Image 1 (cartoon, rainbow, N blue to C red):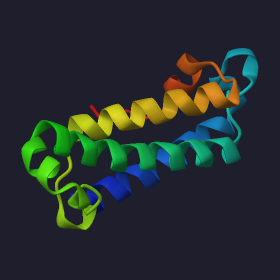
Image 2 (cartoon, rainbow, N blue to C red):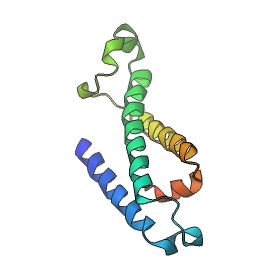
Image 3 (tube, rainbow, N blue to C red):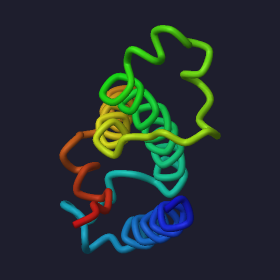
Image 4 (tube, helix red, strand yellow):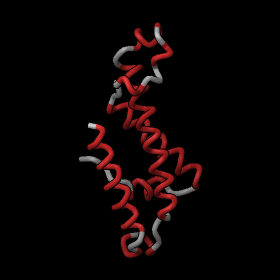
Amino acid sequence: DALAYIVGIVIGWRLVVMAARVPRLWPNERPVMTPAQIEDLLTWIVVGVIIGGRLGYVLFYQPGYYVENPGEILAIWQGGRAFHGGLLGGVLAGWLWTKRQGLPRLSVADAVPSRK
């Protein structure tokens, strides 16, 4: 699974960078983000997915165990991540990043590839 996520992230990142270099794809022929901003956003989203996935697993699947063993919450190398937690973490990270950058959220969301 991890390899598929890595390949998907790299392909999505490259596609968005390529799209940012084609002005006719954007309103007023101005991309909403620079390639450097796209890489920064990607970093935020990846961290959000990892943290959100782990917290989702901890909160939704084994909260009692982790209340008794809080030191193991950060042990991501032992597995245990929830897709829906990762999705929420990635969305929250993107939302925070766009707020920090002062960019229009919907335009940035248009540029982010989604899995269907």
